[in-house]
Image (tube, rainbow, N blue to C red; front, side, top):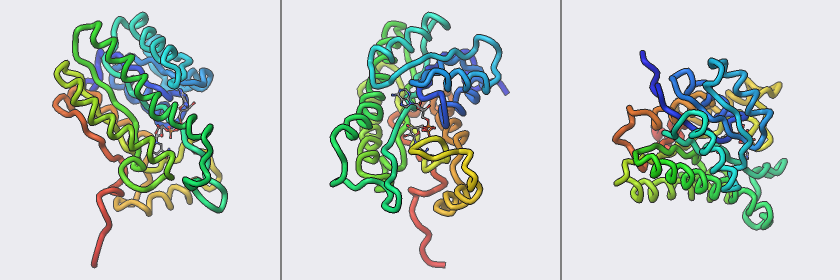
Length: 266
Ligand SMILES: NC(=O)c1ccc[n+]([C@@H]2O[C@H](COP(=O)([O-])OP(=O)(O)OC[C@H]3O[C@@H](n4cnc5c(N)ncnc54)[C@H](O)[C@@H]3O)[C@@H](O)[C@H]2O)c1
């Protein structure tokens, strides 16, 4: 089978860990040329090494998505290195750490500095990524693809008020922007994963109780399996690919059926 992203040029943010790390490997295996952008450059470089793609197919860059100049520079690097931009995957995101014994911080306990930090990355970071990509698509005079990362926390009441509201903003932004840019042939969709065991929110993918944690996560889903980073990277790749050429404005749950509802009766 030919790669789903053969000949495409993509910028993937948050490429130094978790979903981003899985995405650069999978997307490169499917033929994409990738700029692996992360605020943590050594981690992005490690992701490039682990992807094992031919020399030059993936390039790591330091990029803070909360700084529009930094995002513009990552897109400019894609153009300088690979000649164009076809896809941006706005995957970088952060959350507040759960409070031991309490869970996610309650609204009344949020402080303003913390709110600003999460909003800057999760909302404005996605807006800056969309702006940088659309300006480049316009320069190229052609279509393009945006994939955002929201969360089941943007579709339901999971995940705490602060994080959930930032991801709800990504859900709304994805729909609204899809309509705004549809006439240019630009598609905008998001993936909405359920919990994955990554470095996210103070978790640790190499936790000594990993198997137990994954089993617990899986029990929450009708399909009974925890969500893996490759599940999300794969769903995002489908949305980025020409297979999804007539799909826009969709927020796709990657959640083992979690948001579909609960089994009732026997
Ligand atoms: N892990 C989960 O349970 C889960 C569930 C639903 C949605 N998500 C979303 O998936 C996305 C990826 O999460 P993950 O689980 O891979 O997390 P992760 O923490 O393993 O990886 C996130 C990466 O983003 C980078 N990053 C953080 N701030 C950045 C910034 N300002 N600029 C550029 N890069 C930055 C980090 O350095 C890290 O490499 C996030 O948007 C997250 O909200 C995660």
